[in-house]
Length: 425
Image (cartoon, rainbow, N blue to C red; front, side):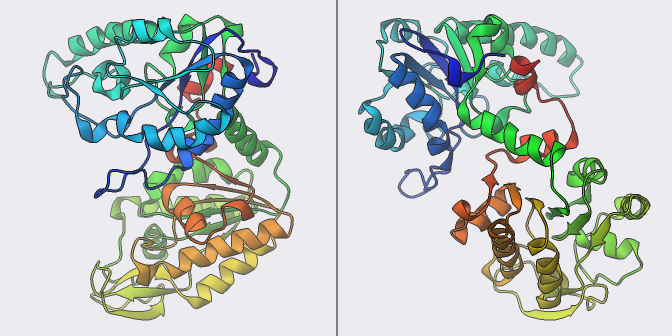
């Protein structure tokens, strides 16, 4: 497999799949968090400084039924160019060119000179990027025919993108779990020595492989979020590796009810109670310590201004719902985390977007940072977990913050990610 570190891009046109699906300020339209842009810079810089030119492609949001020739300004990548140029000017590219139509950028790509950057318009203006038919109901008898036709169109779309360049670099880990034209199919158009991962994906894979295959003990997995069903596969895969499993967030109450606890109006997947018991039984059989919250901050409604009280997690008052872990649980979890040598964290401990119910998640973020300072390897993934790390100014106090929520989970489940297999095999 070709390594970007060893490749000289001099005189080469390079098409790079980046993940510039960045959040925008609704009022100003400016990029509100440029983490993903900064993550792609080492790869772009390497290409430019070697003497190559970079053609950047990405998606933004989920535009539906758009006309590729007109698009939807709300999802246009043109609006993020100033945020990219802010950084590229530091290595000699003050101005980035833009292709208004990603599937008809032949002339612009051909005219590119060494040291220049061309950004393609949102790939998802074309249904061919995702490879899913649009404008047809899933139950339509013609759906299978439409899918077959789309598969051919997707391959043609990928070949078109590939025709702009001599080398392909995938540096968008956040979409590596999707078999999209730009993340997987395009790789078929390049020889083995002309396709590779960028620096960001390499860092992602190194971090996750370290956790999966070379974790120091005790290894603790912290799983939060709303649903057991969202995390069941990764939990099952980790049970063979971890010594400690901490469970928090809304999924807590499926486990608590499965154990006979009283959960009030708390979130619960009634059809997953047996699954929760099964997880606990498997953990016990494998000698894994499972830590559930013991107390909770409850709300009388799902609202940022809700009234609150605190109760034992298995004795939630009628009419109330648990929205965060409370002090005893925080202390219990902290003790486990700070004494760990490997930690993976995915998912919040409560409704982190409401300030009243963010304390538990922030406390876990602080504990993970402390574990890192104690010498642990710590891997963070998932929107709210990453947000908690950033909100508390701890991004440089943990070992690695993943850019891919869904992709990270699927990799940790042991699944083969199309974007990774397309290059690594």
